[in-house]
Image (cartoon, rainbow, N blue to C red; front, top):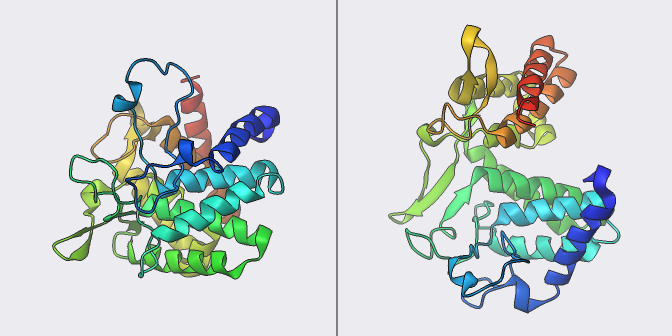
Length: 277
């Protein structure tokens, strides 16, 4: 983003316009309304294209848009960041966790699926965004919302296994955590590092990364690390996105923990990922 400032601003200018125009950014059947779509379509609007389009609205996607707004130009895109933050706060449950999205979205399992699902990664994204926004605005409501979300996040942390559960679903009248068979790599890579370091310490963060490699790492000949999959079930496919995220987390751990091993993991992933470009 920072290396392409002009292009980044063009994208954010579009979203800034969308956030001020109900025609483009909401559906009347969503509750709450007002969420910015996960995807927007600018070209090839031919025929009844809207009947096959993904009209989803997700907390995680909106949080990432808010993060981009704050990184590119926090002053210029302040109103966009505030719009996003105030909207996602509507999806924060009493236990502090953020629901993935509003009611009324289509899903094979029903229009309440996203409302009745809490994603660990989506909450981690919301925490990162709200913490950044608090440093800009100093408005306590954003830090307090982030604190509550982090408290929920730690209920997804399995101390015995050393990693996060993917999330939880509301069914049969209660919230039920996912099984570890649905483990997702990004729950490790995108966990709020500073908060986690204070809560469980560097040694447990290192354990988390090691366990993640064991669960979703993809290895070639001579046990060479090729990358990481999105999840256990997607192995042996290598995800460029999730491998890149993990590489950056390994790099940070190598610096904070002064461990050569994690620097070696970072370099190995960097070399292998470069082959895809």
